[in-house]
Length: 318
Image 1 (cartoon, helix red, strand yellow):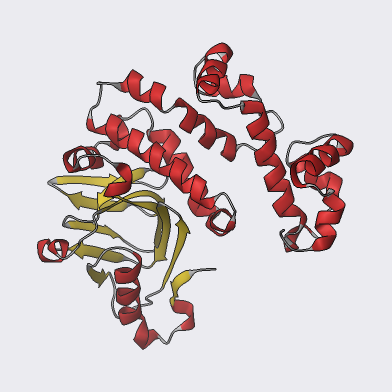
Image 2 (cartoon, rainbow, N blue to C red):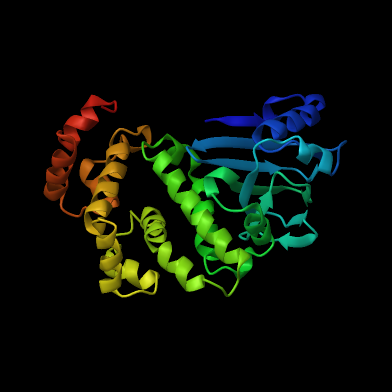
């Protein structure tokens, strides 16, 4: 597990400096001020790579992060962080905007600009970090969106997406599809920022252009749901089934085949995962939406040239 820091492994006297050093490496250079420097300081941070995007999680005792104008001038690679508050209220100040971010809510921070962020008591947050160059958006659009995410119709979707990423970062970052997932995350973030920067304008256009990206994100979150099928996907996105098929066809994309492929990939990973050793192949197949073990075996062999049992006995990816 690629944790940058876990102060549980450190003497109390070393923790303040360790937290400061880890924060500079995991996020942007800033001043780290602890709410109670003489008290029980604890922190746990982690970073994971998704190709064009990164995941960063931070759980700690009360803390304030202050990035000055001088520190901001030192950065050569602007980055935006899109973060979901997980525990305690977060307080964000940047570009003359102030807001309280409650658990379950999304916020954006331009890490290349001065900011203040804090929480009291035990708090936690998880975010995706994306370089401006990956987004391909003007700086004024990104900065105009950071304090206005709640105005976007994509806010809830992206909040759920980030929450899923940070809750399952180990498995997702180790998956062969991690880079593709990072690309989809960047596309979804781009749409979110465009619509938040221009509330009430171009919303229909943004929703149209990002439908396939949103569908992919929705499917990945619901792969193990036996009710997942094109009709429920269309309903979740307030479009007709015919329109959903039309968008997929225009992209040269077979929705049903892609869902089957993603489910097979998930089952393939579970078959050799240590936590699944006591489970039968049929149980794993059902978890990934295959109610008929024979059908699952046939699909698996067609995709990978080997049966699920043979794959499991091999014990290692091929």
